[in-house]
Image 1 (tube, chains in turn orange, red, yellow, blue):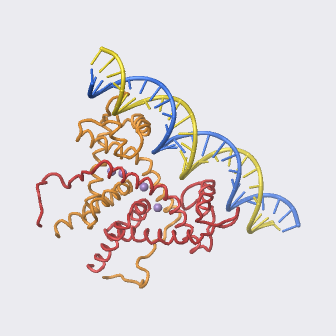
Image 2 (cartoon, each protein chain N blue to C red):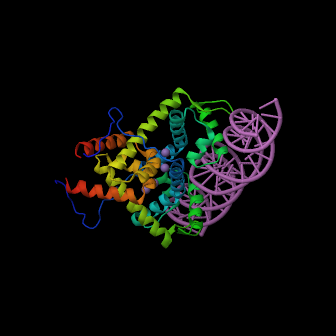
Image 3 (cartoon, each protein chain N blue to C red):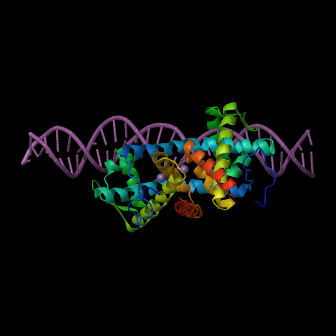
Length: 156
Length: 156
DNA sequence: TAGATAAGTTAGCCATGTCTAACTTTTGAA
DNA sequence: TTCAAAAGTTAGACATGGCTAACTTATCTA
Ligand SMILES: [Mn+2]
Ligand SMILES: [Mn+2]
Ligand SMILES: [Mn+2]
Ligand SMILES: [Mn+2]
């Protein structure tokens, strides 16, 4: 309660930023979008392997809501990136790097969802929003979410 | 404190969802990314008009951290979408539709930033993360952010 | 075990959003 | 008032991530 200044009608101040800082922000968003496909794929592949024993293109296509050729193309990109291992017409496996990335993404995903749920948001909305938000949450913000989550758990 | 079940080591449950619901979530993310360029542009254009009197391609390019030809191309897309009005080599104006979209985006942006700040996140990180997150926040979630913000204001 | 069906791939198309190089228009200073 | 510098545009390239159509391979069932 030490520093109120003068805003009455305006709910929150607009933060003024240097052009260069702002540009960096947009660059960060673009980078996040570049990694997004890989993150979502390894995450889903890990979950399919866990729940179904293996990850098959049909299933992946169904879960993402895309057509099979899209999956084929993207899987070959993941392979080129060293995240999956696989032979044509066979199931898909994660490399060590893929598994590590998947674990980090699943953890982040769970935290984001749990955090949204803790705000009283319904499950469907929490999952839908988290699917996009997760890729834009820095380590700092993720930690803040975890912290807030602990608070809400002890306080309830 | 009425419904603890049985998780001990696992911090949060993974929400199991029907393939179709999951696919819808990813479709929502893809749609958000389709509107993203338009949203960020009208938002920035509105801010430039407000602070500098007009919105010029050079300035837009600098703030986004992209090259001028990218701005030219994107502005022509916005024009085709009916969000801006403009003649070659002149400054850029928002149409009524553009102004409306800009206002909604600016409001949403401010709320997301304010919410992140309320979690104790530093300004730079809040702005950077918000730039991506804002496009994935549903009305429901935005309202939850506003609500949490009110709580944190009264409680502090 | 043959043949039908399901799964997966290939080829080629498209939209988006970025870039560089080269050109045009506007602006402003001498 | 000219002309150089700054601003803006055009053309053409590229990567990404979707798609359909047509083909190939694998699986299952009669
Ligand atoms: Mn996602
Ligand atoms: Mn996810
Ligand atoms: Mn943004
Ligand atoms: Mn995004």
